[in-house]
Amino acid sequence: MDSKKIQMPREVHIGPNVLDEVGEICKDLRLFDEALVVSGFHTFDVAGQQTVDALESSDFGVDVVKVKDASVESVEKVREKIANASVVLGVGGGKIIDVAKLASTYEHSYFISVPTTASHDGIASPMASIKNDKGSISKNANSPMAVVADTGIINTSPFRLIASGCADIVSNYTAIKDWRLAYRLRNEKFSESAAALSEMTAKLIINSSDSIKEGLEESARIVVKSLFSSGMAISIAGSSRPASGSEHLFSHALDRIAKKPALHGEQCGVGTIMMMHLHGGDWRAIQSILKTIGAPTNASELGLDDDEIIDALTIAHTLRPERYTILGDNGLTRDAAIKLARKTEVI
Ligand SMILES: NC(=O)C1=CN([C@@H]2O[C@H](COP(=O)(O)OP(=O)(O)OC[C@H]3O[C@@H](n4cnc5c(N)ncnc54)[C@H](OP(=O)(O)O)[C@@H]3O)[C@@H](O)[C@H]2O)C=CC1
Ligand SMILES: O=C(CO)COP(=O)(O)O
Ligand SMILES: [Zn+2]
Image 1 (spheres, rainbow, N blue to C red):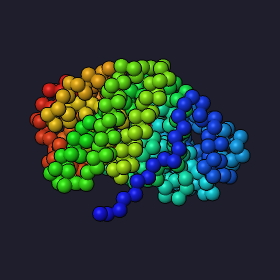
Image 2 (cartoon, helix red, strand yellow; image 1 turned 90 degrees about the vertical axis):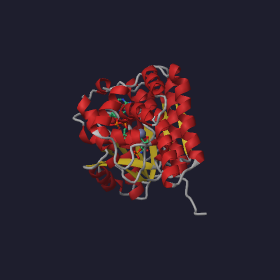
Image 3 (spheres, rainbow, N blue to C red; image 1 turned 60 degrees about the vertical axis):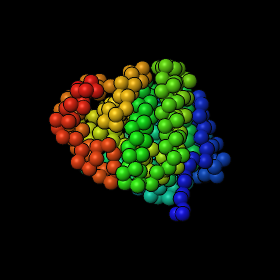
Image 4 (tube, rainbow, N blue to C red; image 1 turned 30 degrees about the vertical axis):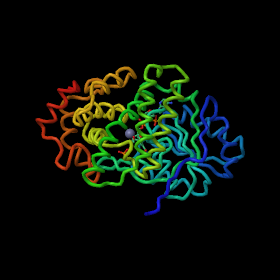
């Protein structure tokens, strides 16, 4: 029996105004002296400055670095700033959290995740999705020491981001179907507990879809908890398998070829509709859930043209050849891609 390391956050603070306590949270975790705040060019104003103020009021020396994308260059830029920081705080969306997470891992510094919205399930996961010229690569990283999810801030984030986070969770359905297929056909390592947690998380979002509404503080709380659970499934599996299958390959393909990609979760949601059909599942149920949540269900709602959808479908299987999915080793022919996208009303 080979040994396994499962990393999870030590603390999760969730609720309105918890961000003001971040300095004391760090001190309770025995983190002192210097801190580095990593944020985005929008999210620094949303929560970055507030994080700096809270840390300084707890006697931390604070440095700030802003990044605009989840690129290798951004990770290196943050690494150079970590220096003597005892802790790195990622304050922003998925890109920011991934860059801060990976840079702190490389520099052996502690990491605290401060999501400013509920748009993806990387909030607490031990993975970071970094982009290079070939697309997205999921890299192992350290789980955050703590997650500080201020639902007052998250709830006032653009609802489009929260709907995108819900769609990222709904995508767990096809991710798990792909994982089971790989287990059966390729004897890939499979974790029933990670799969059960991932599917349960998607079911929770589906059962709550009527109560996930713009402006409801409870909505933010439900989605944050689901994203956290999905991140835990990734921790248990030791890879993004429980939350990333053929639908994510489709999204990463769009990131590579689309003139203006949509949000990660939005693209994954539309991918889930199509991949559910390939799996012989109820794609209309997925389409209906996404409509209820207010997430896109077709090319035009993604702001993409039909050819971008078709092109992404035909190259999706090449993005991560080691990850077996319903797309198989050879993927979809162009005709099959057109037929699939039309049948599921995506184009
Ligand atoms: N590591 C993991 O396990 C996972 C990683 N991911 C990754 O996460 C990324 C997707 O994250 P996502 O959040 O959708 O995209 P982004 O991080 O690109 O955020 C989208 C936009 O929303 C802005 N924003 C964030 N919070 C607020 C707020 N409260 N108010 C106003 N604007 C806000 C960001 O601002 P700003 O410009 O300041 O950044 C950015 O412009 C992808 O790279 C994906 O691969 C997804 C799932 C899992
Ligand atoms: O987006 C993710 C899970 O929702 C992470 O997946 P990837 O490993 O495909 O980047
Ligand atoms: Zn995702």
